[in-house]
Length: 195
Picture 1 (cartoon, rainbow, N blue to C red):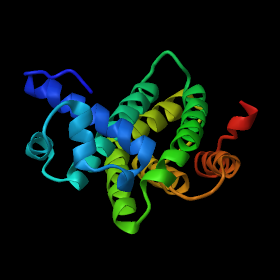
Picture 2: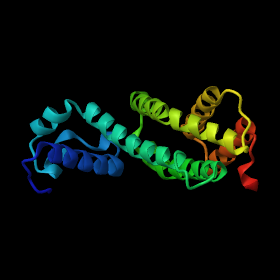
Picture 3: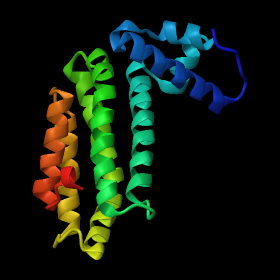
Picture 4: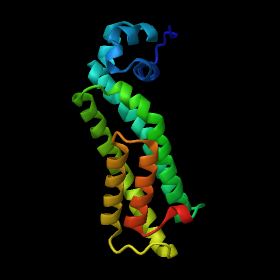
C-alpha cells in the first residue's frame, strides 16, 4: 500500500501512477476502483472525487501516456542538432518500437469497442499535437534540399494520419516497420533504409 499524503496534486499523480500500473498488469476489466483505492491508500470516494468514474480515470491515464510520447516526438522533430533525414529515421524507429512495446498492453487493456474508441480519441489528440512540429520538420527538409514538398502542411497531415493509422492496426512489428518505411519513401521521396 502506498504512503498517504496531503498534497492534492501529488495524490492525484500517485493515483494515476498506481492506476496505470494496475491497468497494464490486469487490463481495464481486471481492475476496479476499490483495487486502485486500496493500493493508493485512499478510499474509493477519493478516487471518484478526483476522476469521477473508472472510465474517466482510464482516459486520464491514456492522455498522460500520450502526452509523454508527444513531448518526446516534438523534441525529436525540433532537434536542430540532427539532420532531417536522421530525425525521420529516428521517428520511424521510435514509432516501430512504441508499437511493439504498446501492442501487448493495448491487446490486454482494450477488449471492446468502447475502450478502443477512447484510445482512438487519444491518438487523434496526439496527432494534432505533433502536426505543427512535423510540418516544420518538412519545411526544414525543403530548406536542406533533402525534400521537395510543395504543400508541407498537407503532406505533414497526410503522413501523420497514415502513421497513426498504420500503428493502430493489429499487424506484426515487421509489417509496421515495412509500412512506415514505404510510407516515408512514397510520401516524402526518401528511402530511409539507404540513409
